[in-house]
Length: 421
Ligand code: DWN
Image (tube, rainbow, N blue to C red):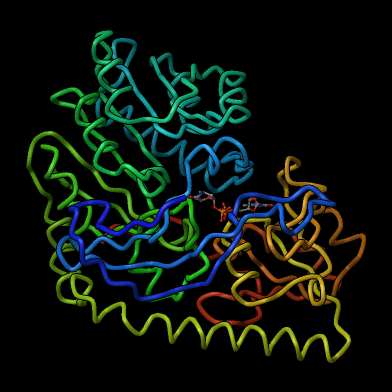
């Protein structure tokens, strides 16, 4: 573990911290029962802004092997919404770029094959790259050949030496996760064909700040991107940000950046870059009051939970999510208030949430126990979860979302279409 003193993108030695969440355990490191507290390491969790290239980033480095090999239980396929999103992207890329048997599609952080399986099913050659052993095994079982390695410039050079240049590289929820950001981007430049396309998806830092989604800050998320930060990062490596799509419903607000070895920016990406300048996202002042707003949200959530407990209410939570670990630990919520957390991922059942030590159970526990209130730790999937838990709600159960404000959530049918603007 080491402190990050300089900007991960441009090397500026004067990055400015604007929020500290204290020392916290690793958000995805779920805990076997009986593990002594002393065996659960904690690390400082804080974020800083770089005035030079505008990148928002955490100020500590935890070894990737610790984050993504020893402790990693996240499987993308447990979210129907993510599966649908991936399938649409694969279909759109296949038709837009005329992909076929002579093409080559690479996904970095391919997880359990949730996305590449769509290309493989169409007979398009694919390669997954993911160091997490269980996820890679699941991908191969789904017909997706997978390299169990971390991606970087060295691996890209090795693949290129083997004559393997990618027509498409997909990197969803990974560019924010790598400690060597420049090596990662240089690797994508090395591997992509000269007429190829790279699509990178990550949550949008604008929504993190403006929706107070502080819980999406954890050690595996090294960076929090704006279009401006991505544009300045990729240019350094002979790549260009040429387009952007926005998915407000995905992970609290996700952007998909279209990056190519040739410069041809769309009107849309130029609009995003201009809007970020206008909103002040390129200046420290945009971020400096975030800490105060986060403290207010913590106070609001704690008082809501405390008053429910005073009324004798039983409270459970939904989603053994990494963001849930940050939320529970920063807000000081544990087994004194929350009886259990439910999750659809069986790999998480029987384990405890990091730090708070709240037990994780199958989703069926909600109907078995019928708690009065369920706190949606995976609030980013609130519509999907509400549809699933219609019976729990019909029986009088209440859903509580904590972000962007603490409020009861009633099911709606708000769409999930990509809002392109
Ligand atoms: O970057 C990352 C984001 C994209 O996903 C990863 N580093 C880790 C992960 O973060 P997270 O754990 O906060 O993500 P989720 O996808 O919000 O976690 C949702 C949790 O809820 C998962 O454990 C799966 C579970 N779930 C469920 O039980 N029922 C999810 C859905 C949609 C459901 O219907």
